[in-house]
Length: 141
Image (cartoon, rainbow, N blue to C red; front, top):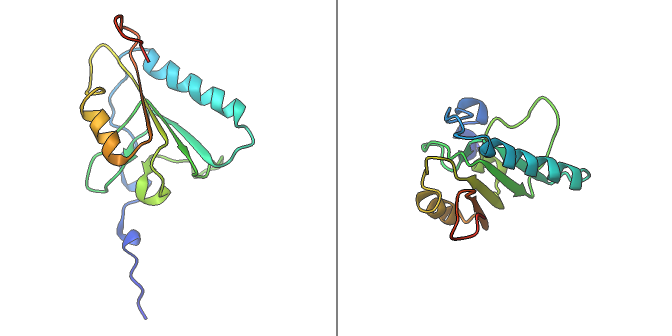
């Protein structure tokens, strides 16, 4: 008897682009998520149920392009160190929406306070953090 599983028809991370090929505008977009990733790796060295991605594409639907935050944390997904490292974060494979998404504002805004904020809210990401080092009237975080 033939058993149909619709998930078998979805693309894998090898089938999809792993980046949007957009270079960072400034060094903070790389340093801040990298520092957070290093801190979590030290604090949670024995924890194997979390993953922190830096500049990695999150695919929410196979037919849509990835959204690429500066950093994101997913709790409840396997962390692993072997040849099968994640190329991208596919929601249909991970079955877990990121717990936290981090965007660092650069010289050119890219909808962090509007389009991206609404998109992550629709994805039901619990924590969305925007860091804007140039903000003077309001706190940068």
